[in-house]
Image (cartoon, rainbow, N blue to C red; front, side, top):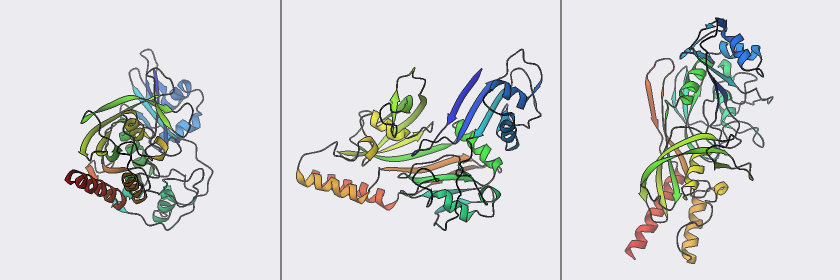
Length: 350
């Protein structure tokens, strides 16, 4: 049986990081090299590409990386992760300041500001996080001359989301971290400013997410039997209600494109100032001119959707230590929340 899953946390372009295949070896299967076995199962994939994946630690049998020469046996759980084909772009190292939360010789954790695109792509060929990493890590083979547009990336957050990202410095660490993200053993908490207050103070949103049928720049909740959908699970909790907006904590179990933004809209509470999903207009409150001016001031204060990747937890691929990181709110996010608190307090007092 083949379970084909594409792990994806690319928020802007929707480009996936890895193809991920999970295959259970049939009972009647004789001993066979794993690269030949996978080539038979995946007809459209070249054996050379499978062997390259094995060399990088991306062929995993029963939770252990194996070489191409490993012989599969009945009942083996075979997983294959293959980075998508390299993009033919020249990555220019750029001396862009990085907010590095943690770094060792294997990986680093950065706190990405809103407005910074993660990697080069359509319309953003320079000035990205990868350009900054290519400069900062120029002595690392993975980031040296001619590095890939997704070098070191294991997960991504979109341009206008702030917060934490972990970056691998070599292929072995890359493979180990990618496997943690795929099997949901990482911990990721986001704080979101949304319109209104969900009826239930906490809960779980679980459904299928895929490309919007009419607007390809959007994602949408699809029917359960839609073959274009992928399961998406978000656990949420209302931390603070400020009348017309709320601060909501979201914990990701999966990492689909625009997952939190889509799930909050699905609940009827789009992210504040989320232009793509309708949160950039007044969705709760009065019709008074002063209120409209207040909201416009908030939009100007935080000219992007209200979403911050607050915490990140994973197991260090080399030391096996559990790593936990928390980032402070950026000033625009913090100031916008405080502005709403003050407004509601004045409303109550008057």
